[in-house]
Image 1 (tube, rainbow, N blue to C red):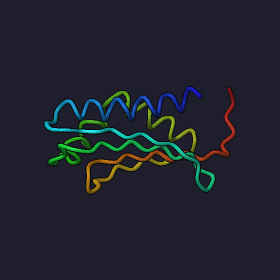
Image 2: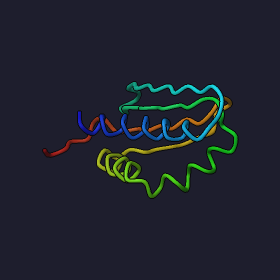
Image 3: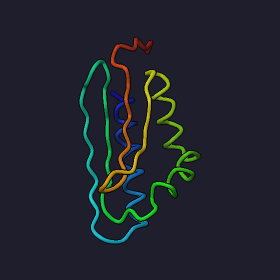
Image 4: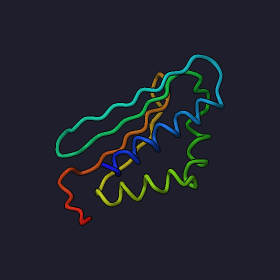
Length: 103
């Protein structure tokens, strides 16, 4: 549970921080579902997105939230993708659901 909370928190914090640097109406959508043995978590930020994808990429790779997110993804043999959509930026984290972890 704590790993999922870390992912939701990191993605949502990142989208909120990005929105604070933009003008105009904006929305953040967060979703989670299971598909083909993967837990899929998505965060999409819409509105005010001029050149935002390029600017965020370099900033976030040294952010502590990004490093925590990368560690959780590694533990669950997952992946993370960021893409520019018609309406904004979407980040997707996929985690394998069959990973056995020791506590």
